[in-house]
Image (cartoon, rainbow, N blue to C red; front, side, top):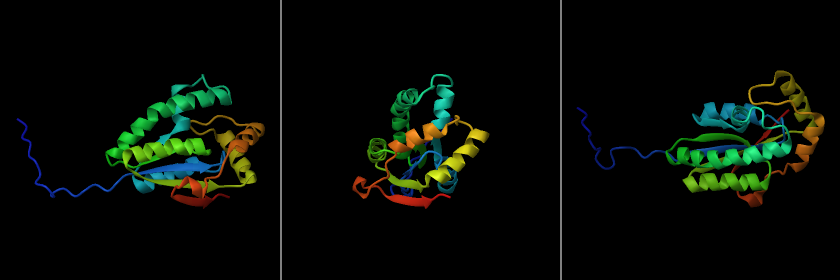
Length: 177
């Protein structure tokens, strides 16, 4: 037999609001490394786009356009899931590249829809630092990683846009290197 009891009003302390931590920075700036540190520091669930995409689409992503298609599909599923986690009081570190205003607008809808807090972690790094780190990543190929050429790095970096004050995010900036 199970007995259920109800706590009197005020007996349970209100749960602090959850926070969505998300990252911005050039390719190979150190966002994924930072995301693991943040998840541990904030007792947050870590959701990594690279890992989810490699596990869900191990052979389907061959080009940058393929990545864009599958990333969009993944966001359609992950967004509501993250929103539900935040609504339940669970902080989340979203290791998805929030490197352009449209991506940051998408993530705003996620945390605002949950009534959660947010913190944009911006990893600033020179191209030289990123290329050095990219070379190491290409050698080690941690889970979720794919080999990226210098030419691909340069093409992707041209798309990068720093977050601006007009976007209205709470930003913590890190200098890589």
